[in-house]
Length: 299
Image (cartoon, rainbow, N blue to C red; front, side):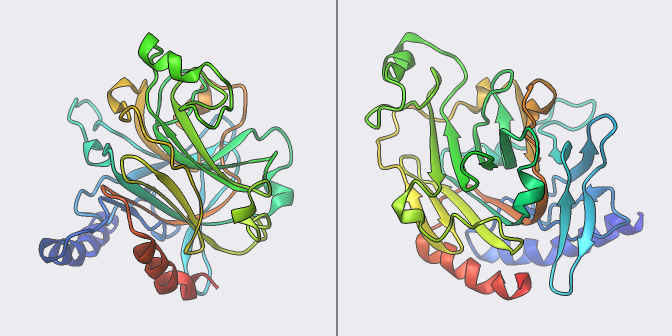
C-alpha cells in the first residue's frame, strides 16, 4: 500500500466511525488538501470515490497550494478534478449516492476578478454533476460568469424535450414558468447585483475566501453565501432531476463535463477547497453552523 492510499484510509476511519452513529454525514467530501505529491483528490466520505487531477491539451493541471490555515487547489483555465461514475473497465456505478432528489453541495472559493474574467469565460463551474448534451448545463452545479460576476446555483430537471415538459417552457424568463432561457426544464438561482437580497455579495470575487452552499429539498432550491440565505426559487418543482438522462454522468470540480464539446470556456480560474455533497438538504441553521465552524481556517 503506497503512502497516498495509506493516508486516505487513515483519514476515512474516523469519518466511518462517526457516521456509523450519527446521521447526516456528507456522501462526498473532497477537502482538496492532499498536498503536492498527490495525483488524486481524496474523498474522505465513507464512499471513498477519489477524483483525478486532469487538464486539457497544452494546459496545466490544478496545482496544490497550502496557506498557513488551509490547503486547496489552484485552478487555471482548462484544468479540473474528475470523479468518475464508473470505475475503469467496469460498469459499476460509483456516484449513485450523489444522484438524490434532495441534496446540498458546498464549496469554499477564492478568486481574483482580473484573472477570472479576462478572456472568453462564459460559465465558470465550481462544481458540476453530469451533462445532458453538448454544451448543456449539469443536473446541478455552482458557477460564476463574467456578465454577473456573482454566483449561481443551477438545477436541471432533464435533458430530453418531450411535449409534457415543453409546455412549461414556452415563455422565456417568465417567472411563472419552470424554464429560463432554454427549452429544457432548468432553474438557475442567481446571486448577483441585480438581486436585492444579494446586496453585499457583488464583490464576491475579492481575493478572499467565501463559503457557498446550494440546497434542494425536492421543491425549493436555495443558495447560501457565507452562511446566509441569499436567494431561492419558491416555484413548485414539476419534474424530478433525471440523472438517468445524463450523457456524461461524472462529477467535476473546477469545470463541467461539457468542457471539450462547448465553444465557451467553462473552467474555473481561482481557488477551491473543501467540496462536500449531502444526500439531503441542509437546513439554514446547519449551513450557518458549517460556515462558523470552518471560517477561521479561511482567513
